[in-house]
Length: 235
Length: 256
Image 1 (cartoon, each protein chain N blue to C red):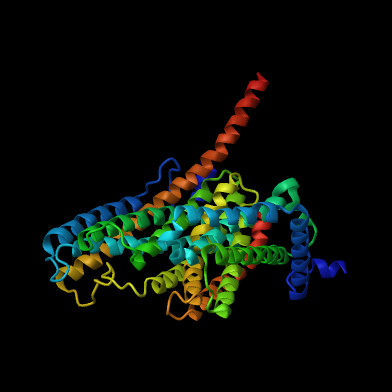
Image 2 (cartoon, rainbow over the protein chains, first blue to last red):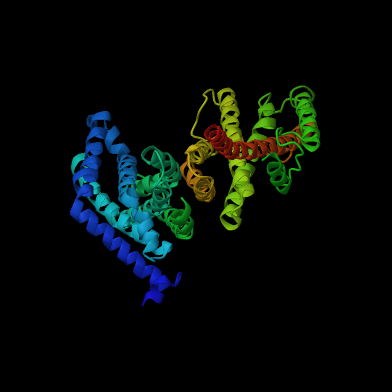
């Protein structure tokens, strides 16, 4: 049994490690309720603030809805990623994880998996908020789900890599957004255009954007999986 | 300390005899050639070559714009190669090469944005339009500002090098994705771009000035990179000897 745990690289151990870490993270979130009591209200607050900034009567708000939606998701993601790795940085938990014999790739995929679940909940609540407060009609639900899903995997994948990088850094709260947000520029572009098509605001094809978002997610999932061992050991 | 510094210095391929300076015969020749090249570029780009039929005098900005952006991308590729090699070999050489190159790349991206904006002011009448290439440059410029910010966070050399190597690799794979995304994003808003004006049919002194600019800026990049690398190398040695010196001083005080 011990050998199976320490043997690095086999897909089965990586996936079972990932499941362990993801379950741990989600249990932590459920018990601490930081996500529900702080990140989610923050996201809703920004939805409200955008309405103040862009007068709802002048149709600017309605036209800008897809972009605003993704801006809120990106800002909230920075908080969620910071929170996800903040709990690991305290009390040397990351060293504990290293000593536990879990594979670095498994730890990374587990963190990303838990982040993905949290962000998807956030996506859903925000979408409901936007429909209710901004009066948005959804005309292409399948495309919408595909765009939101692939974009969120990309955000979680890149967030997991940069979260691990900055976890033990001095000044990580200011560095994380500086690193993560420019990297997520293609997600913002693809997500916004894809949602515009799904809401019937733009006639252009929407599925190529899903393809681009999928490539982004795949590239960063692969890189994050490969990079997490040096990050865990040296960063 | 000085002997070990110069010994490691030669392994970097620099061949510096004196670790207190960043210049060597080779870099002096390279620097002189670069200066002559810049003078020639000014002569051909500004005075000898004729204004373009379509672009008029603004074609002269291209002789600098194309080289600065090309060198910036080359610099980030060098950074990525250095980053990958560092994670594989774990030697100081690759880390310092990656970091030095990234710094130069950011400077050249800044120059690209500046001369692109000057071109825009003349051609479009405004400094900034969300033209695909300029937009891409701005996003990547900020991405690599992040790299330099990570570099500036105090840490042990190995920790700092690992963090930077990961950022260098995560950033470089984003280049084609950002390109594609921005191209599609601005696909409906085709406008005259600074790159779209670079036609293959430019000939004579115009073509000569364009290729000369590219060559000269490559020399400039090589010259800057070697010097920046040596400065970084000496800074590492100074940091090490600074601590050792301080310890030796305290010991001497205690002994007295």
